Amino acid sequence: MRTVTIHDLKAALDGAAGDATPLVLDVREPYEYAEGHVPGAELVPLATVPQRLDALPADQPVYVVCAVGGRSAQAASFLSARGVDAVNVDGGTQDWVAAGYPVQR
Image (cartoon, rainbow, N blue to C red; front, top):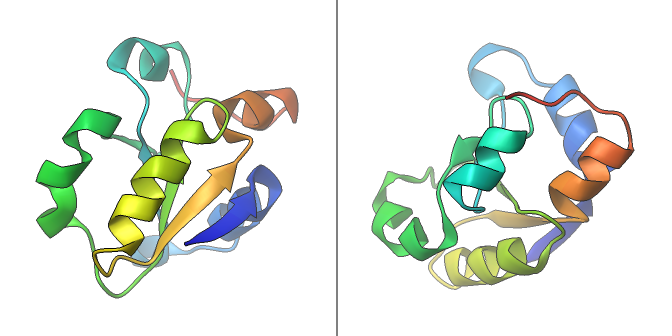
């Protein structure tokens, strides 16, 4: 499992075009997601990650984010062990907000 900073994720999102937009999974709970999330992030609460395994792409990285990095590390480790190119986003949404990056509500 790879780990990147929120700055690396922002750079990946900024450098993407059209269909190449990186997939970002937010593994927090719905109420946390509603309070604010990385723009375009898809809500997949940690407990539901195993059920979503077959829907994840095999040909591109999947960035996994939570509040600070603990739950995303668990999800990314699970996904990596099953062949997904999962990337843990260290610092999570908390660091994303602190850096002043845009937040979707």
